[in-house]
Image 1: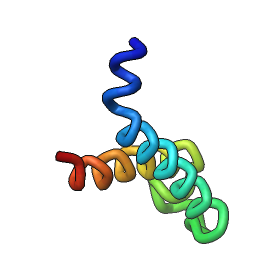
Image 2: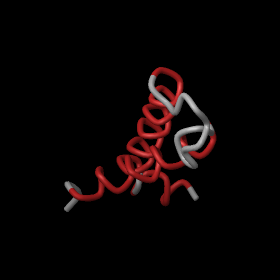
Image 3: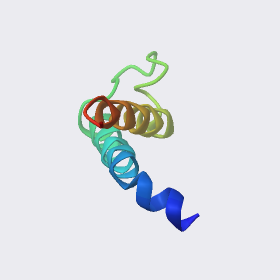
Length: 62
């Protein structure tokens, strides 16, 4: 488990930062009328931000 964490610490950091960014996006911008599926729920937006953060970080990983 420790080896897995040390090998993927950059990806995990991207997931964490993306999740925080997704939550902040929901909090400050979000969806005002509640009809947006992802943007109206803080859990979905944080999950989406985490996935996108992990993917963006892995683009630059060798």
